[in-house]
Image (cartoon, rainbow, N blue to C red; front, top):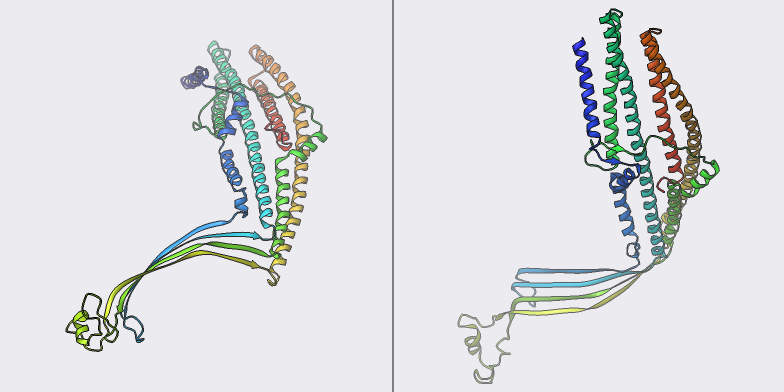
Length: 482
């Protein structure tokens, strides 16, 4: 048992020694530096920034529909037809037609009940809403970073308390072991103190894991790649309470709270939607203009002139009408029968081009009540958002009221627990002396140790809780990022 106890003690001391030796090599981190890293690297903030950029680039007159849309259209077609028509005037044989066409078309909305202006106002409100949502995410990230930073401090301080108790237990084990060797102690006393030492060692090891996880949570909020990175935190777990007036906090919340401001923007968007739906009753005037052109080619067996029409070209023969035999000898050959139509393979080209313009006017007369119902739906959505705005305001007022009362309560608890720790520390030192003198037993001393642990933990938790309440008040009143 003694060897096993010695091994555990050496292992713990070696671990603590390594931690202390590496403490000077880890970087320092202040609260302001942690918040700065979070604002730069926090994943939620980075995602919201992209949404904010999207809303900003969408807020333009082009997106609202003020400017015309211009499009180029082009195409081509090729047809091959083997034709044997019943119509004597149609071209027989293999006909090939090719064509290409191109057009530049512009469409412009001249009037649609001022819907373009309303759409631009909606885009501006949507950009403002995106900025307010980004502000909410930033405030939440800052609050979480503050709490995570001080949570590391809280768990580090708890670890120190466990270390203090563990050292006391180790000293007590060595003392009762010495007393047993001198004959004034018993094996039962040694076993009892060793059990206490093992329990305190387990608490210390478990708390080390809690500290490591607290660092991981802080690194995640700061966007650090190395989640196991540790720091020397320069801002201690302490807070100087401020005197807040509830009326001032309420006024600041009503004018600066990001969630409430975003709700007001949403309400304004609902009102704009009513105006947008009313434009459905207005005439819609659109201008469509452009320039188009077509180039085509046609290849076929075209008939040439008959015997009665043919004249010998100049320089070929006599200028008088010739006989059929002469015509055949000149153009057809000896295998052409009299009366047969002679053809010649030819390709003809053609084109067409020019500007065009078209003015379209659409005046809604009857739509089966769809426009009226759309306007009514927009009005009902606006009324619903009014109720929701009142709900959000009341919810925030309730949260502010509870947080303010909680802040006052925790401020008082910090003062009380600080006095409790001081009294418990004095009692612990006096009890140790009494134990060494034999005026109290180990059971009484363990109870004193437990009371000291509880008092220290309550004081540390009270300090952390007060910081949490203060951060919540700052978030509710829109001042956490100032």
